[in-house]
Length: 146
Image (cartoon, rainbow, N blue to C red; front, side, top):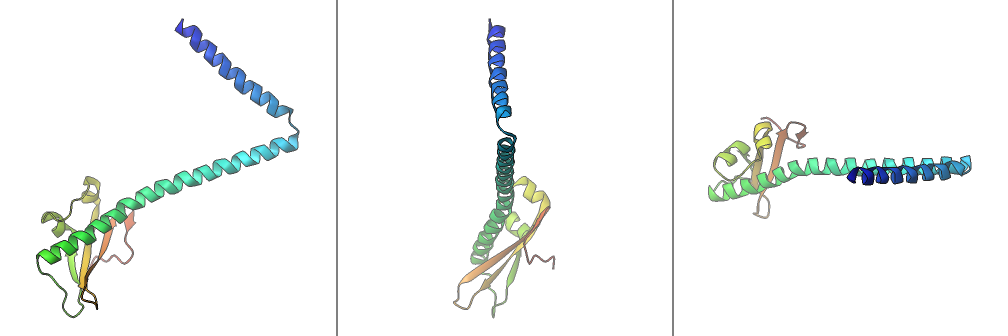
């Protein structure tokens, strides 16, 4: 009984698409070309949207790492009383922040990323930080191995 239902359903689907194809072929050639062009344009736009979303989620992983690194560095420098003197910047390696429990990394980041944060006091006396990471396939602009 189930096989008959499946065969009947498949037959109806086949008839549906055959009917659409036949009606499409009855249209004047000029109209068919226009419809095909619009379908190609629509498909192209869908591909662009999907690819851009994949790229954004890829980059958000690293921007979140940078954000977490900045926060961890500020907390660490506050707890350890590390302040740059005369607007000097104190460099805190990501490894130190991880080992001391201020920063947690995902397994893939721990294996493939290195980084550091620069902590400094701005002209208004506020403590600020900048984060720099280098991972497989991504590097923060301004990153230096020095």
